[in-house]
Length: 501
Image 1: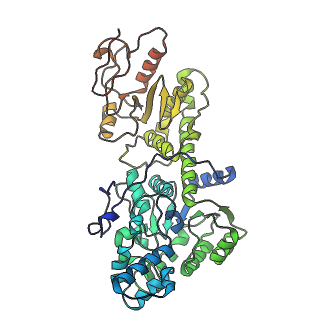
Image 2 (image 1 turned 120 degrees about the vertical axis):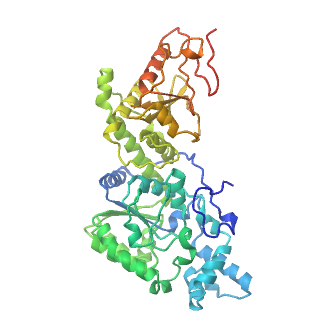
Image 3 (image 1 turned 180 degrees about the vertical axis):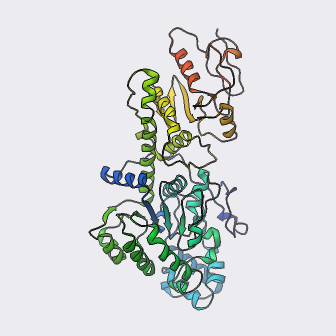
């Protein structure tokens, strides 16, 4: 097991090491696209315009590989654990109704010290609240980090979005439990957790409406009811794994949506219309007003969010490469080629392209929502690579049998960029790392890739492969393309290049 080393451990992790967090694998293949083109376009327009807000609930965290238990399953585990430790026999309803079970302890003044402070900690599935974020959690973490969404509001008490964010390189994934915390200036967008947070304090999480009449939830509900209408004014709202059966929350959200004049409501839920309408009739009626566009996406939340992330990242790269068209024409003296290959990539590979395109090392999260004017040169180099026949392979290009990675390096030295990437793992070693826009103070030999000595080799082995500028890679590939010329293979790290025979 890969234990949680750099994150804030749950308060009971030292007592229960099995609850330490492990990460989900990231080599996820691209799923077939399910969003229709019209919905995809509307969501992208909302994202670029800064209007997108996501509400997420338990349905998101129940998706694999997270598999956080349903309320009914958690109730059964808690009730069974209590019966085994106390010898008491609870009513059968408490084995499937988590609120009835919480009420049982609340009536006896035992909700925090016994139910949350002891019984909950001994359930078999508690560890799932702290490990294995799924693709949906990763998407929300990415969106919050780069500002692709304005706000995430969650009824989940797990820490899977925070875990995903810190895995992506967020130094500290903060959550907001109060209005004041939501208004704090942070490097990422606000992540509001309406029902509390296991990472912060498991004893201050919401399980029964009785708690709404006492601190801290009475004040929190009042504050957010006052704050949200202004924050959500004329936003587009996406509900993922969330269509509340909490009556208090239905009332709050109905009031908020009515006052915020939402433009569009997208409900992501595999259930059919009749079930959703019955579950939250007030919300359903508000979502179907004449002034609101309603879209129902019948698919699992994590798949929807992963596809939205993939779509956003693809268009980020398309914008970046398109911005280099005029620069390419000045360099090559002809029209830019049509850039291909990115549409076949997964969200994970596309995130790595965004990471390198913004010059962001693997231990930091990507902050840029859109490409900026400093990236035009990088876009032109992408076009040069494709014009020269390079093919996209995962998170790099393949050209003349070499893996070529492009990193945004405008205004920096190659050595400085390499230093920023020092000690960071690479899933697949690169042959060439091209720092576009950077300067290289080390001499580059005229013969580039020819010769029979280390002095005549392009190979200055770096942390992973050879780190050069775009002018140097042009020279290298020009030499490789010349017929009947001996080419010295790039040396592996720590090795000297072989001479010609």
